[in-house]
Image (cartoon, rainbow, N blue to C red; front, side, top):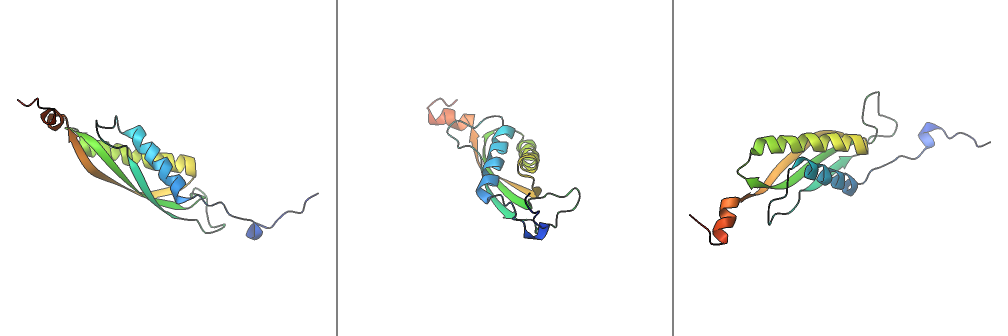
Length: 127
C-alpha cells in the first residue's frame, strides 16, 4: 500500500498563459457573430497569477486569476458596446469553466472597424 503524501508536499497544477489565451480567443470568436471580410479573428493576451498552494478557499478558483485583453475587428455599423459586453461575458465564463480560474478583468480592445460602405468604395461601387 502506498503511503499518503502530505498536502504541503504535493505538487501544484499551473495552467500556462498561452493555454488561457487560446481559451479566451476561442470564447471571443464564439461571442462575435462573424469575422469581417478582410479582418482577422479575435486574439487574446493573458496575465495569469497562480493561486498560492493550498490557499484556495470554498468557492474560490483553484488555479489562480487571469487578467485578459482581447483584441477584435468588427463590422460597422454595429452595436459596439453590446458586442464588447458579450465578449467580456463569454470570455470570463469560458475561462472560469474550462481553466478553473477567476477572471476579475477582461479588457476588450476594438482594433479596427470594417465598413461595408468602405469595402464597396474600394471596389469602385460608390453612390
